[in-house]
Length: 163
Picture 1 (cartoon, rainbow, N blue to C red):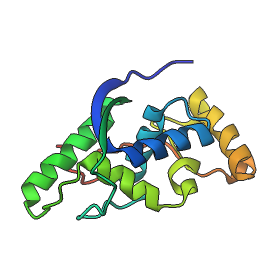
Picture 2: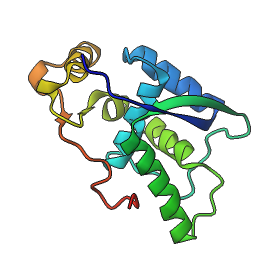
Picture 3: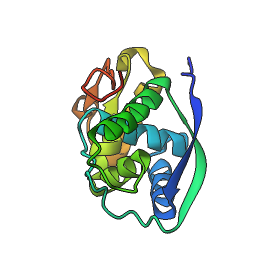
C-alpha cells in the first residue's frame, strides 16, 4: 500500500476536543488521532460542516498542544482559512481555525464526519479507502453500495482562500 506523505503540525486544541478526536479514532478504527483530524478538515473544507464565525465554546480554558500529521493540501487549506479571516477582519473570535473545525464536527452526527469517504483519488485505487469502506459497513450496518464516497476531491478547489 502506498502511503501518503504527511507533514507534522502542532495544534492547540481544548482538552475535550483532543479527547473527542481520540475517542472517534478508536471508535471508527482510524489509524491515529491525526487521521481523525484529517477527516474533520476534509469534512469542513468540502462544505459538509460549517465553521461558526464565533466558533462557539470548546472549553478553551484548558488547551493542549499536540502534533498531528496533515497532507500538504490540508495545511494549505488551514493557512488559507487564516488568511481569509485576516482579510475579512470581522472575526473577533479567539478560537483557532483548528478549534473551529473540530467544534463544527463535534456538533454533527458522526456519520457525516467519519462515515463518508472523502478520497483524493478513487476508492478503487486506494487501499486505505477500501479498508474504510469495510469499517464503515461494520460501524454503521450498511451495505457496500450504500457507503457514501466523494472521490477525486480537491479541498482547495472551493473558494477557500488557499490562493
